[in-house]
Amino acid sequence: MILVLEDEITQDQKSNIRSILFTEGCVVREMTATGQNIIGALGKVGKDVGFYEKIPGVAKVISISTAFKLVSRQMHPEDTLVQIGDVVVGGERIAIIAGPCAIESREQAITTAREVRRYGAVMFRGGAFKPRTSPYSFQGLGEEGLKILAEVREITGLRVVTEMTSTAQADMMMKYVDAVQIGARNMQNFELLKCVGRIGKPVILKRGLSSTIEEWLMSAEYILSEGNDHVILCERGIRTFEPYTRNTLDLSAIPVLKNLTHLPVIIDPSHATGIREKVIPMARAAIAAGADGLMIEVHHNPDEALSDGAQSLYPKQFGQLTRDIYVIAPVIGKQLDFDYLDKATAVDHLGKANGTGRQRAAFLGEMGTFSHKACTQYFGDKVTAVPAPSFKTIFEGVKNGEVDFGIVPVENSLTGSIHENYDLMLEYDLKIVGEIALRIIHHLIGMPGAEIEKIKRVLSVSMAFQQCRQFLERHDDWELVTAKDTAGAVRAVSEAQKMTDAAIAGKEAAAIYGMEVIAESIETNPRNYTRFVIISAGQLQKGPCSKSSIIFSTGNQPGALFEVLKIYADHGVNLVKLESRPIHGKPWEYMFYVDLEADAGSKEFKPILDLIKAKTDYLKVLGSY
Ligand code: PEP
Ligand code: MN
Image (cartoon, rainbow, N blue to C red; front, side, top):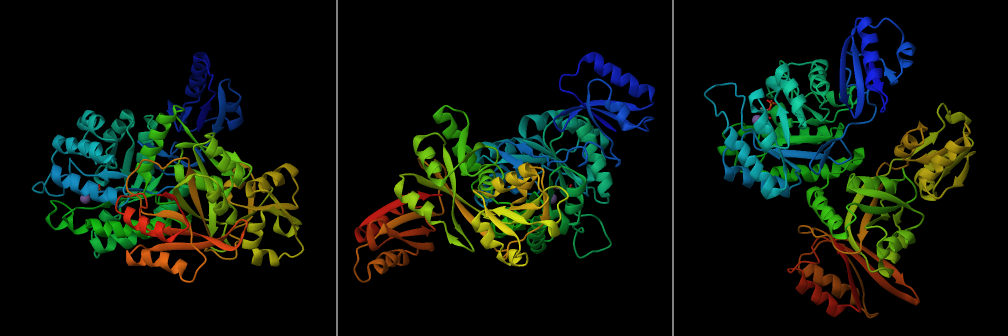
């Protein structure tokens, strides 16, 4: 049983609670975990929950049936997000940790770190104290290795993690690294677990070679019970009778854990399979199964690696893998953000420049809309999301400096372009600084206990009705009512409290208003993605960009458009989108919107831009990102 204490509890009230529990014969542990002040009463309690709830100072009582308490979902229904510098593990952005098995030299670490960062890793891994099966194998560089890790962080901006094998290393870990790893062989080294619980650094807790999920969670419980709830679980394969792979990757641990615990779960396919070629497919599968991140061994020259070379990816292979994950992640509602670290720095810099300390980003509608989700997926919790009533007010807000960013949808994979935003982009002198694609999964949402057979009226935006046409055709007696945005539709249903009303929206909106999903994924086509762009008054100061958006118009003579497109073709510039829009007040004359795979603001692109200028009447670079 866990007693969650009131924030303003007095010392006397606390002593009283302790003495009651003591008399009951419980082992009493007082702690701060998962952000709350709690008292854990372990052992059999004599009275029912209601009795303990009435003790002054007690906010609520949670009776937990499993052996693990603090790590259980019952204790903390929301997902825990573990923050390591700018990186958040457990949110909607996939965290990729990569690096060699062991730090071998400064040169090896820095070269590999630069490579993995280039391909989308946000943290660097590397062992300095290696728990090797043979005492004659390379044991790691010890403190020297930790110093190299700290230097890698300085040079690359990657956060660094390493394995801690003894409590004697605690001070060194505090000094040099951002997170510590407890290796599979030490998962049940309880003194070590208590120690990392006390030092408070984020912990990556690997699953023991032959541990059950419950034993693993009990080990995590040790860390949390010492007051450290920054714990990430890492499945790395377990011993089975199967010799074709080094271990057997237990991917079903992901959904099992997601049910049992609030802690984030990552997968290490490298130690799980032990074979380079097997790492990539298992990494893809892990993300599809709902893992929050990956830990992957990469070496700039794996053939010469001092440990685990056979399972280490070549940097290029790692790059291919992250591209695959970039495509897979939105299918399950997540993102792999290649700009993760640069963006965090650029946004921080912007905050310091404008003196507010925190940036604001406007999105259409209210909390819980898909635009809101796009905003939180793009920025994490770096910026404050601000609801706006229309696209025009978003552009106005950015222009006037009321907000630093705007997030607007520009196209949907099924219903096409959102022309209003293309027109606004032409009208306002703002920059596109980023983009994000979101899979749009619609649910039918109603009051708790509502039944589909009793629904009479459905509220949502017209685009959602279009996208759920087949489902709605099966219920052609329903009255469809257009709302301003999807979350607003859910709010309206929750306010009306009618069991015969429902809304079509994302699951985030259902959660915000305490409503229930009556029918899941009701969109006709599952390939339903919306692409949003991020607009700002100026270009963000970050590294090289891979994509740009440009608007131009040409004269009205034969071959005018062809001549511009030929310039792109001649210079090998790949166009990923071409869209035409009528020019206001000039019938049958058009503006062309182009997205291209190049950094239009770079020195190298300048000569191409000059050629295009010469062939166009009007040219505007909307931004590079
Ligand atoms: C490692 O990550 O380098 C390692 C030794 O992992 P594990 O503890 O999972 O074997
Ligand atoms: Mn290894």
